[in-house]
Each structure stands twice: as structure tokens, then as C-alpha cells.
Length: 233
Image (cartoon, rainbow, N blue to C red):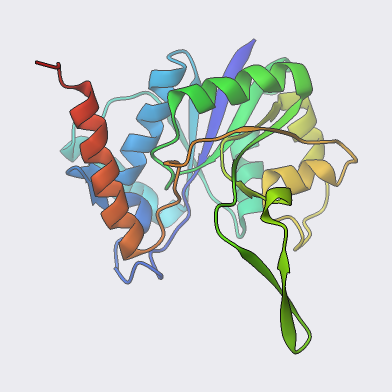
């Protein structure tokens, strides 16, 4: 069965406070997005990579690939008005002749997803159709109520990550639905069909880089990764 990954990267860097979109900001001297694509290639070398970018950012991406000699094979498609429409465009890049496949949808600014999590998600989707990686909530959770707030049992909650991974036929059927504002991620689109989503263990380092603080954490994580690859004395 073929594996596909749709990498969605439509950020504008507003919360980062920079003119450069966050997916192009450097960590370890190279754009975040290159690290993300490589994470999937290293986990599943035969995976087909589809990068969804706003049309106006594709020229910059081409230039960055030349500048950094980034030759990892991937296709690029234009993003849409919302994440829902961007994922739909990514799905349309998978040939109609392909029916039996597993496809993961991943945030382009999550470069530290582990190889184990990627493989776990794809393996589980072959058995359970719809899979989402999650991590436990480690801080106290309070729910805002009218005029007050109340503590909730954090053991009943999980933080959702990506790649959210599905059988291709299911995800195609889900994205035939009209867009709704309630569709905040791919799992919510699939759940609207009445399909249950399976949770698998994610990795805490799989952060979404959206603020300057996240960028600082990302540099530290990358340094740790490189140190772990060095031969021990």
C-alpha cells in the first residue's frame, strides 16, 4: 500500500512578528519546512510528499531549495482559503487511479515529529482507518464559564498533534463534505461522517512553531538531536 503525506504550510508569520512566513524561518541554518519534509522521508523513505503552499510563496520556496541544495523529491500544490481547502487541494494531487493508500496530513511547522510517531500513525491507520497522535495534558485545566471558571480533570483530555493519518478512500469521502467552521482539523472532518478516530501516542517534542519562544525551543531541540547523533567516546 502506498504512503502519502500532505504537508500543509500556509502560515504568514503574524504571531512570529516577522515578514518571513514561519515555515521559512531558519533553524540550524535551514528553513523549518525542510526539516519537516526530511522527517517523513527518514521515517518512511518511499513516502510520496505533497507540499501545500500559498501560490505567492512558491517562488520563494523554489529559491530556498536552490540556495540550500534541497533536492528531496516532493510535489507542490497551491493552498486554499482555509486549511480545509488546502488539504482538499493536496488530496487532489494524489492520482485518481490510486485507491488503496494511507495518507497523513501534517503541519509544516512541526519539524520534530519523531520517526516512531510517523510509523506508528501509518501502521495504525492501516488497521483503524483514522488515527491522531496525542500527548497528555500536564498542566491544570480550567474551563471558562459565564462569569467564572471551573477546574476540569486533566486526565480526561489530550493535546492533539499531527500527522493525522487516514485511509485515502475515507479522507477523500470526508473532504467531499461542504466546509464548516467546526472543521478545525482533519479528524473533525472525518468525525462528521460518523467515523471514530483512534488515538495513538505522540511525542512531546512535536511542537508547532508559531511564536519566537517556539523558535528558541526549536533551536535547542535541534541541538539535542545533533548531539544524540554524534558518536559516543
